[in-house]
Length: 114
Length: 116
Image (cartoon, rainbow over all chains, first blue to last red; front, side, top):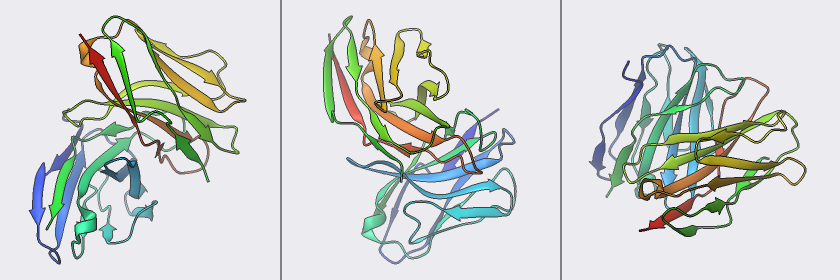
C-alpha cells in the first residue's frame, strides 16, 4: 500500500510552458484534492474531486486544470506556467468527504517557474 | 467564510518542557472537525491530532493534547515533554462536517523550534 504518490518531486519550468503534476492513491479513496503551499500562506486549496468524473474549484483555481477519469488518479495541469505558480504542491485523499476521515497527503512537488 | 488563524508565526521550547500553540477559527457551522498537522523539514504533512466539534472531551494522543473551547472558537495544541523531533511547522486546519466537500482550511502555520 503506497498511499498517496506524487511525481515529480522537483520541477523547473520556463514561463509559458505547460506540464502535468501526477497524483495517485491506492486506497480506493473517493475524495482527492490539490493544495499549494507558499511561504507564510499555509496550504490553499486549488481543485478537488469527490469521485471519478466529478471535480470542482477551490480557493485558488486560476491557471490550473484537473480531471478525474479514475478513482486512483487526479492529475493537475498547469496550462501556461507563470512565476506566480512557483510553489510546493500537495495532493491529498480521504475515504469519504463527510465525517472525521483523515486526509492523507502525498510528499509534495516543488515547482519553480523561471 | 470559514477562516483559521494562527497568531504565533514562530515559537521556541526547551527540550523536555511544555509548549502550547494557539489556533482560533471562525465559522457559523455547528458540525465541523479540527486538526493539527505537523510538517517537518521533509515536507511530509503528518496528522498529529483531530477533534470532532460535537465532542466535549479534549482529544489526546500521547504527548499531544488539545484545549478545545467551542464557544471561544479556540483550538490550541499542547506538546508535553518536547523532543528534538517535534521541531517542525504546525498547521491548524478546519473542515466542515456536512455537505459533500471534505476540504481543509488551513492556518498559516507556526514554526516550532526545540532547543537542546
